[in-house]
Image (cartoon, rainbow, N blue to C red; front, side, top):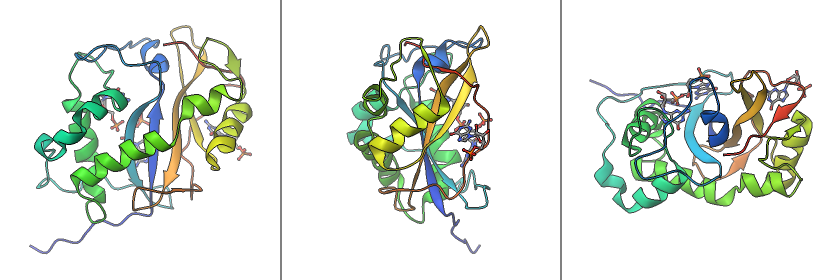
Length: 208
Ligand code: 5GP
Ligand code: 5GP
Ligand code: 5GP
């Protein structure tokens, strides 16, 4: 069988605000390793195309193998915590992200490279600090989309996409921040295309 490597144009590096995952109707479960810090966590590093399409589940012959990333495990627990129920140690979440998204990047980076790239991006991009230095704090207050996007742009040099969800009372809130990264997984770039989705005129930034 001839294998043709999956091609893609860039990555979305997606971080989630835990407060906004947890205060929804669906609620959340803390990892078995304990409540995560009140900071953004990694959701994933997702190969994407300039036309908005994206590949997924690219290689069933390259399953998640925790022995390849044992050196990254404690950082992953801190920076890439799972909040889905039931509580888990993260393996299920990381397996899902590798198999759905990571395998589509394997012509550029291997499994260790994929997880290390995400961790390095997280270290480079301090979203919470970017927002807080613009007066945008996770204390239940609300902000405009422009304020939030501007704060991230000022701190990183690049315009993010902001994804909102709704809390139990139906308020629009800051859920995920997307930044675009080149195919090496190391450098931020301007997004060739933005995802879709609507935020309210006022966006809450809840506590965690
Ligand atoms: P949702 O239905 O919550 O928007 O997305 C479900 C999943 O689809 C995400 O967690 C992610 O795995 C994938 N996904 C959603 N939007 C995008 C996108 O624009 N690009 C890529 N690569 N994956 C996406
Ligand atoms: P996606 O396909 O959207 O990249 O990944 C979402 C999948 O990972 C879902 O099956 C979800 O249940 C699982 N998951 C596990 N932990 C988390 C978490 O902390 N946040 C999100 N958004 N999904 C999680
Ligand atoms: P514009 O491209 O003119 O800034 O925005 C066009 C539309 O996309 C507006 O409705 C605006 O609210 C929405 N939009 C722009 N940036 C974002 C973003 O980061 N997240 C979301 N959810 N919508 C956005």
